[in-house]
Length: 90
Image: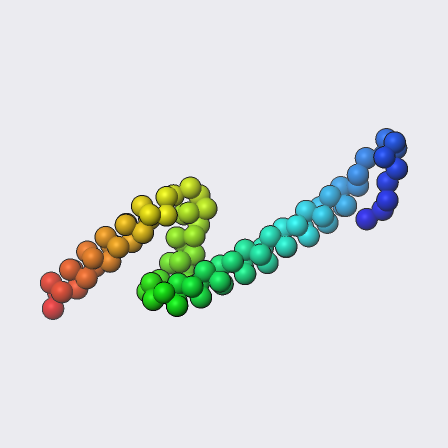
């Protein structure tokens, strides 16, 4: 990126803005992938039984503002209901 004189009235080049935005998006994506991989590893170590896709949905819900404890209660409830259905079907 070119150096700009602070007093200059020159506006930033749109290509410079897009390139910087793409770089920031790439860095955020890399950090996000590292965080998700770490959370997936933690989930596995804690034997949560959540696969990567389900864990990712839970993470996205938390990022969207869903309360984590409420989400955990719902997942536990769904698992209990599924277990009951599976027992009844045999």
